[in-house]
Length: 472
Image (cartoon, rainbow, N blue to C red):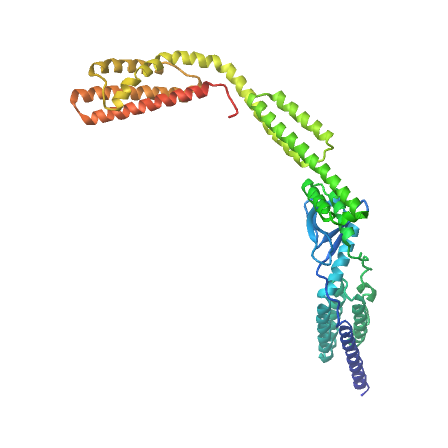
């Protein structure tokens, strides 16, 4: 009986704990039934290493070594104009920025999903307590309570610390239930985490929403922080335009508008200086590379570096692109100079070869009128054919006896083929005339057309291969 009474008493205590926990959950849910309406915009802050702060309208993104974000211009409670900005990651105090971002996300979570998620958590815990009360196996009840306790204790860290104090109170009640269940299960050792570890450290205090003046001042600060000239010019132009009307009243607006306008003019002058440097350098480098003037292109590199120093090295990307182009032109100039030096060395061989093939080419060119007549099936006179055929055979033999320089071999082969086709045309025409066969006449016409085409190609190829090298 004593055992039975003890069991009943334990059941009553555990059930009472569960009822109290369920009642507390209901109370906690009801106390936050009315929530403040979530703000439409989320403002983050980027804390820079120099102590300044920049506003990010919405989440910022880390891309390679840059931080990309949108900075608002105007009243952030409405729909401000946004300017996309990127700054170096190394300029940001990430420890403080991350703390502040966590605080912003925590508040945003509390304003939007927090209460619904907490109500869902409460329902799950209530269900777990009910299941514990209905389970008869002491070991099973203890395992269920420990699991519920673990899920509950992890919830704040997974949900931006939302209502961590309330969750800590619930964990404390579950600890009492678990203590009694351990006794019921015959366990004497206890290994409970402290309730204090459920409560996260204090969040970073959020700064108030910026006004019109602060957004303007932050835009000018962002223009100074970004290393992208286009972003800087865009920001300064937007600030100058936004302050045009407020500046009429004088005061801070007039001063800031004058500063933005002055910096904008300075940036535009820089843009023009670098644009002029780029256009003049590219034109000069192209002309010098076409002449193979290696020293001239190298001097342009020094000119660009010196001009960049004089301008304060304010456009590193444009300067790097220009120097990369000069490297290409310098390589072209060096290659051209090498090719021309090699051509000069071979020029004597080219002249000797052209002198050797000159008689054969002359014979072939003297025969072009007769070959044209054969192509048109309009002659020449039969008495001229034997002499034509003899000249072409002699030219072919002359070409065959000449060994060309290696680089002129393609043109030499075309010339030999032209003489071969021309001889075939003359022989074919003679046979056609002697037999009166029109088919042979057409074959001779085709051979003559081929000979004239090959002669023209051989001349062009020979001129190209023996001409001084160029970059074109």
